Length: 205
Image 1 (tube, helix red, strand yellow):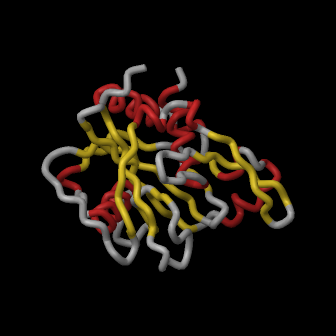
Image 2 (cartoon, helix red, strand yellow):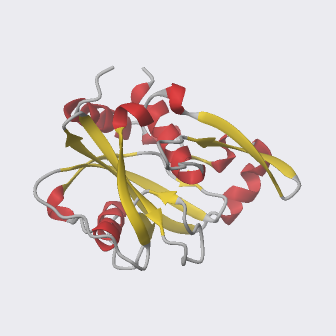
């Protein structure tokens, strides 16, 4: 399969024309939780799916959250956060958060599309914004939020063989989710869920 930057641009733009297909979220594999998740997902947020060209092909940027954060501490995440009142679009939210968290600003980001809204069990309506990262930039992790910045080959994340459907007990019920272990990083939960949606919407023909 073609995982080039140009192909990513094309697939992202094509997907963005079909956003009327509806939202998705943590209820995708937990239908009994759908009503609760939909009722509780009231806080707007956006994340940036940043893809850049490396020597071995496109890679996708991810962060490891600091252990001092109140929620999802130590987990793997996409750069992003809550929408501010001054944000005119969710694209602005994602790019602002990306600059605040890892130092990549609007001058180095080319927005190429967005994925359906992802409703999380933690009460967020997450708008995933896809972008190509290019030009000269220096990664600067915000020490209050980001413990580390790393990247994973797009070809790895968009390969269904690397998607593991796992489960855990949660409030007396079995909860199902995706995980995508890569080297010493444990990508799971909402981040893996969004990347799974990206795979389904962009790379399943």
